[in-house]
Amino acid sequence: MKVTVKVPATTANLGPGFDCLGLALPVYNEITVEETVMPGSGLEINILDDSNTYDILSIPKDENNLAYKAIELLYSYIGQSVSDIKITIRTNIPVTRGLGSSASVIVGGLVAANELLGRPADNNVLLSIASEVEGHPDNVTPALFGGFCLSSLEDDGSVAFSKIDWPENWKLTLIIPDYELDTLIARSVLPENISISDAAFNIRKCAMLIDAVYKKDSELLKKSLKDKLHQPYRRKLINGFSELSELLENKEGILGCVISGAGPSILVISVDDSFEKIKNDVKEIFNALNVDCDIRTFEIENQGTIVI
Ligand code: HSE
Image (cartoon, rainbow, N blue to C red; front, side, top):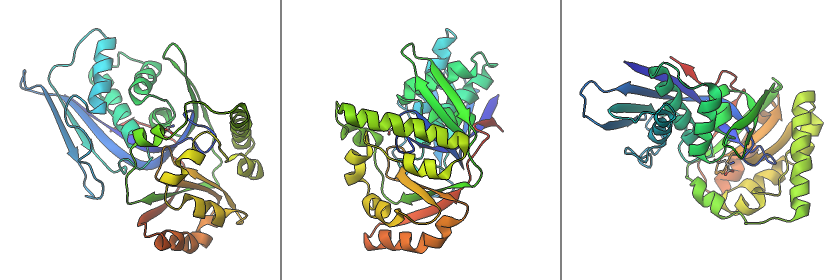
């Protein structure tokens, strides 16, 4: 028996919501988990990239694979150990670009294995295991449920979360460069401690962002897409982020730009088709920096992970 699931890409942080905000995008990885027919055949992992676009060589094909690690924890939750299993990952989500490819693999492996086992775990358990493997819940929550999610990894390992309606006319443009940035590196540049004034800045911007989404208030969102916890430190790793922020300042219908997750992709949020009007200027910035990038505009993905 085998189960295949489809899991969306995600963009996390949205500026001030470091490690707690994320939303799903309509680009999908497919993950298949199957019990192998031959007992004793052990673990087999296949990675397929139909588009041949993304560097999949960095995805481990042994016990270090994140889908496998998550599946191991699920089996351990039900008091069993994984024996003979085959995992196939068909990738469409760019790898190490800040678009939640690792979260999709973790969530996909978990949901597919949970189905195979007859659904012993509910969504709260799956989310808690996924967050343990990923280290933070901001990508895995929207990967599982779709939409715009606020999530908090609690001290007991559970995840408190909320899915909030995203205004339909707020479009999401991702600028996806052709270079990779490992999340571990992007986290290593962050300081151990921050000042109380920077913490207070982020608390008010994050609260304002949630209020803006509830009220569908574009002006409020524009004021809220600011951050002092991670972007100032990561800026030097993200080619074109400073130049783009400057270009977008005060452009009509542009609500802001933020680093997508740990980068290097950049997320621009805009009203209706406002981004189209400045797309060529944005391309010029990256051309001038000799950075090849893919620029793609999306609507939010609201379905989350589904079994196919
Ligand atoms: N919140 C995470 C970070 C997202 O910014 O490091 C990347 O996984």
